[in-house]
Structure formats: structure tokens, C-alpha cells
Image (cartoon, rainbow, N blue to C red; front, top):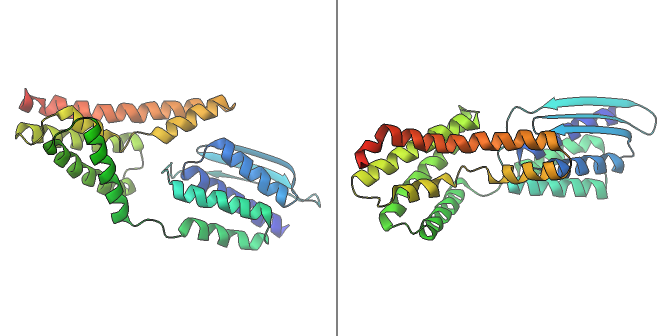
Length: 255
């Protein structure tokens, strides 16, 4: 019975880490049922939403375990962590270890050192520079875009600890970025205000969440897919709202 409870606790924590890292529900459901099957569990019932998971199962001796977990940390897409978790599920299904060892394996998977923060920042700067060129921005536009990119990256590291609501975070970020872009155009540094805004907005657009919402709808999880879709719409409207607010307050400087 203790082994069953340890397995249950692992699966709930594993599910939370998968969802927080950006997994779609079909991937999560498949992983959980495969893990349960690898340990010979019977009568398995697993239910998942992006903010909640519930699991009920029995072992071969008829012992029953059930649990649930609410996920308050939101989604912070981390494809490398997601890849490690997928590899962990395959490893467990191929050679099931003792349930007592599962939590340590999970911690090892999500705590493995990834790219450093400076390396991530360099990646963002290169991506934003490329997009500036695609949209035909000038060298002045590029300077403003890169400056805003650094600000948004630092905000993502520190401000998210204080603001858990992605809508509020998006409004604040794009308001600051828009205001800086307007000021830069007013002093003659930036030549195209909207190029700067469009390029920097790419850092906060919820593209993966949008793909997951459509996939959920097409795969039969209509309710969760629609909830995720409307969440994406709100986050996108927040991005636009921050820019509109900056233009409304400071747009006279470029009139």
C-alpha cells in the first residue's frame, strides 16, 4: 500500500511539472496511463485540466489510492524541462524502478542545469534582431528593440515573482515598451514606432498556448481547449491594451 501511495504522489507531481512546462493534455494523459500500466495498476481513472489533476487507481491486490492536485503556479513554457520529463516517463515505462526512487528521479529531471540566463538573453536578442530585419526596421529601431528586449527579459526574471497574473504582466510590459518606443521616436532615434512594438510583442505572445488550445479542441477536450483559448485571447488583448495605453498617454509626442 505504501508503494501505491508513493506512486500516486509521484504521478501527481509529475503531472504538475508537465503542465507547468507547457505539455498538452493528450501527452500528459498518455504518459500517466502508460506509467500506471507499467506498474500493473488497474481501474485507473485520470482527469486533467491545465490547473487541476485527479487520479484514482488500484494495485494488483485491490488496494485503492486516489488524490488530486490544484496547480496554482500557472504555465511557464519550458521545452527543455518538458523534453526531460518525456524522457523520464519513457525510462520508467521501459524499466519501472522502485516507487521510493521516483521522486528523486523527478527532481533530477527538472533540476538539471540548463542554459544560463546570459545565454538565454543572447538568444532573445538575436531573435529580436532578426525580426527587426524581417519587418524592415532601421538601425535606430534595432537599438530600441534590443533595449526593450533586455528590459522585458529582466522583467520576466524578477517581476513575475510578484505578479502571477499573466494579463497584468503583459499590460505592464507592453505599456513600458510602448512608452519607450514613443520616446525614442520623439527624439529621432526610432523611425518606425509600430515596427518596434510589433517585434517586442513577439516575446510575450502566447503562441504555444494557442497551439495547445486548438489541439485540445480537435482531440476531444473541448471544454479545456475553449478555456485555454479564451485565456490566450485575454493575454493577447492585454498585449494590445498596454500598447494602446502608452499611445493614448504619450502619443501626442509624435503627433
